[in-house]
Image (cartoon, rainbow, N blue to C red):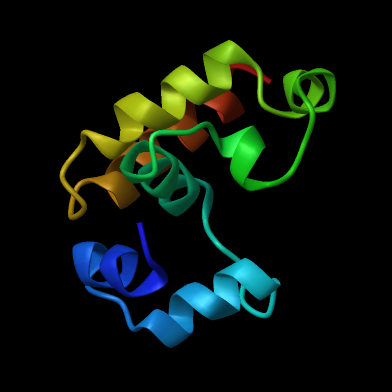
Length: 92
């Protein structure tokens, strides 16, 4: 898939894709997961990590959590984050 095709799929400019690729602009974790799905790869491969390094950074539970989170409508995600932060404060 070309940068232009990826940009079109996500409503971005191909220049933005280039900035992500060069590391000029940072990419959110959720965007990384979206891109990895679109490119039929894994986040650790997109980041150039080997499997042992990525396992220490993104374990299976965190990856699954991000996948589930991305299924929540975008307008509700901030509310879900507030709820999760509240839970953390209660149990911490």
